[in-house]
Length: 167
Image 1 (cartoon, helix red, strand yellow):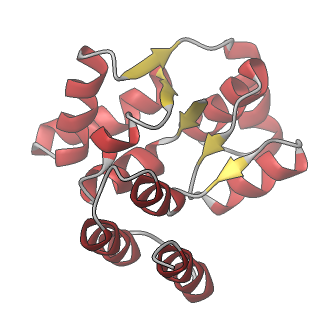
Image 2: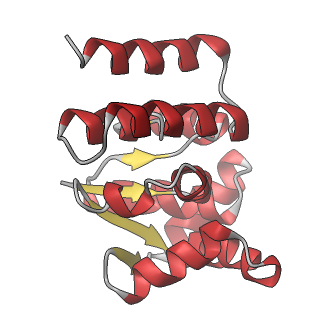
């Protein structure tokens, strides 16, 4: 299954140290615009930028050039940043789910009928597929809780989903 990732998802999965494992359960794609956003972190040797650079070079995360007219339309019509607009365009064009934790992009994606996945799904799925241990999944969710902008109910649901996987 292909999944489009925006910068917030890449950054959180990298900080949680599960971005490489995420590549083992899905064909991850992102856009040149998102890559440019994340790569700004190279100036400060940010882990997420180094991680994306390495995984893109290895071909584990595909960097896709999208139709700029469609992304520009989303930027203008919905007042989105270039990364979010490009991920929505990629998701529409390729008919694939998108992973974003940006509230506005999530809402717009759902309005447009896209399958929108939170990055918090990845630790649970990785554990379910035996790609990481329960402790690693729990630690990843804790990092994502600390570093992300999730509501309490969303975090609680993710931890509950992980707990359900142990039954």
